[in-house]
Structure formats: C-alpha cells, structure tokens
Image 1: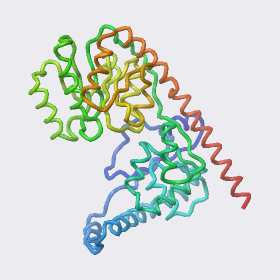
Image 2: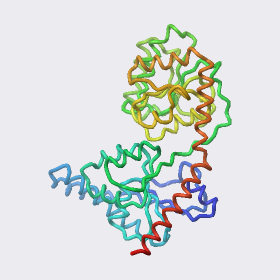
Image 3: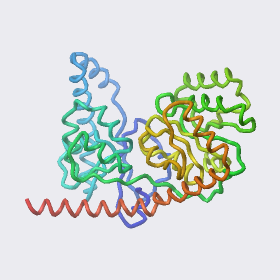
Image 4: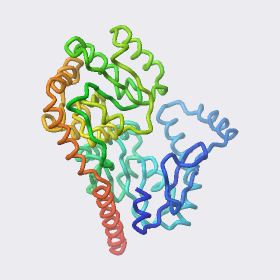
Amino acid sequence: MGNYFVSRGYEVAFVGMDTHNGVPYFPVSSEINLYNIGGKDTNKQIMLKLKRLLYISKKARHKFDRDLAAKSIASKLKNIIFNEKPDIIISFHIKDTYIIKKHIEIDCPVITMFHCQPEVYFKEILFDTEVLSTTQQSDCLQVLLPSFIDNVRNYIKHDNVVSIGNVVIPSTNISNVENSKIIMHIGRVSRKDKRQHLIIEAFNKLRNLYPDWSVEFWGDTQLEEGYYKQCCELIKEYGLGNRVKFMGTTTNINAQLSRAAIFAFPSAYEGFSLALTEAMSIGLPSVGFSNCPSVNELIKNGSNGILCGDTVQKFAEGLKELMDDANKRKRYGQQAKEDMKEYAPENIWNKWEELIHKTILEYKLKDNSK
C-alpha cells in the first residue's frame, strides 16, 4: 500500500513496533519514512512486573498492561506525528487506535483497519470499554469482506464501516487442474485454525479409490512442532508416507500451486486468506468449510469451488466430487481465477485512494462546522 501511494506522489510514513532491528522483509520504497519504536528496557520491565503482582483481578491487570504499553508507545509516537504532520492516520489495530485517540492529541482523521474477522479482535478486549470507545471514535472502520460490516456493528455502533479486500496479484502461471493428481494445502502447520489433520483424515477415506492421487502440504512446520509431529504420526499410522508429504517452505508458491489439481483448505476461521486467494488466482478449485468466515465468501459453492459441512466425511466428499471430474475442476478453476480479478492491485488501491480522500474531506467539513 505504501509503495503504491508513493508511486502516485503521496508522502508516506510507516511506524512499526518491532522488538528487533533490521530491514523489512518485503521491499519498501526508499521514499517512505520508516520508524521503529519497539524495544524494551529490561530493568524497567522487571520492576513493572513486580508492581503488576499487586493487581488481583484479571481486569485490573489487563488495564495496567494496556495503559503501561500505551503510554510508552505514545511518548515516542507523538513526536513522529508532530514532525510528519499527517493528513490522515491509518491504524493497523484497534489497540493502536486506542493509543492515538486516548494518549495523543491529533488533528487529522483516523481509519482503523481490521486484518482479520473483527470478532477475533473484539473478543480479546470485550470487557475493555475504553478500547471499544476509541475504536468507535475512528472516522472510518475498514474490514476485508462485506459480511464483516455487520460483525463490527454487533460490538459497536458506527455509521462508516467499509469493505476493502486484500490485494490478490493476478498470476501468469498456467494451472494443470485437468491432468494433475495433487491435492495441495498452503499454510503454517496449526491445529487451532489451519487443521491439516482433517485433510489427512479425509484423504485416508479416499486412498483406495484414487491410488494415483497424493497430498502436499507447503508451509512452516516449526511454529507448532507438537502438532506437526502428530500429523506425521497420523500419516504413518495410515501408511500414507509415500502419498502425503510436508514439503516445507518455498519462495515461489505460484510454481507449486500450478502443479496442483485441487486446493484443500479446512480452516476453522480466516480473515482474508492470502493462501486461498493465491490458489484461486492460479485457477485452482478449492474445498473449504461452509461455516468458516471469509472462506465461505471467497469460495462460491458450485461456482468456483465446494463448501461443505464441518466434518471429515463431508470434506472427503467434497474432495471426491472434484477428483472424479476433471471438467468440473477446470470450470471451477477458471471461475475462481475470474473472481479474483475483483481484488487486482489497481482495483484495491483505487478504492483505498477514494476512501482516503473522502475521509479527509468529511473530517475537514465536520471540523469547519464546529
């Protein structure tokens, strides 16, 4: 986003709160002003932890932690805001909005972003009325999918909630859905949300019907090593070692996706899955669960993929439907590729540019009317 707006002649500043120094993982334009206000004072942290023990209730400890972090960040952030004199601030998280609105005097509008299903954020701070209040004071709230608009309004009343999805870069790779016999999954290995074991369980039910098919998992296996080992043990138990494999990470995911026939995605919840949308942009038909937020909007059942009930049996049936029919795989995949054009970079950045201009204008009009 920053690189795009710099290319359009805007002045952009990024403020991060990383505990480590270094260069950003993704390329960042040299014209963007980068600030990192992270890091900790170890001695101070020890004293504060001792003070924290004086608070008995969970709510009191939460407020202590929140205010401590907020004041520390605000003391550094306010100088940056004063020097940059922004026309608008885009806040990455509702807790960042709390810091900006509660602890810093600003004279510009704030857009608060939700990078996941909003309910995930609100459940974290449900009893924190101050964070809810400052979120409500945002000039605009941005969510990733239309259904998330009502999700936000279940927690706070706000008239200006807009849906702008993530960017999905169109792929030039050609998919091989008709001839391939590979079921693929992309994502970090995680029991709570990604649930790779369900693919193993479902594929085991189909193994004898489709002896020439296989499963590939691509993604980091180190974040939950215990769960990764359980998945490996499950593969061994079913005797699927030659047909179900964890492939590790890759720097060219499109090349791997173009080798697949089906994208299997049994997530419990998502915000706006980049893994799923990347697979769809290649032209892969997908199988996901109908009760998974985000997935149940991106996958259109019977059009660009299959949505099924949240059981191993139903997931196996969804896979089987696509494994049986190469023409259906091709048709669904072509539609998936077409549907992802909605999230092409120009479309998304144009929406953001329009929203920014509109928000600044409305702020000035409101300010002048006071």
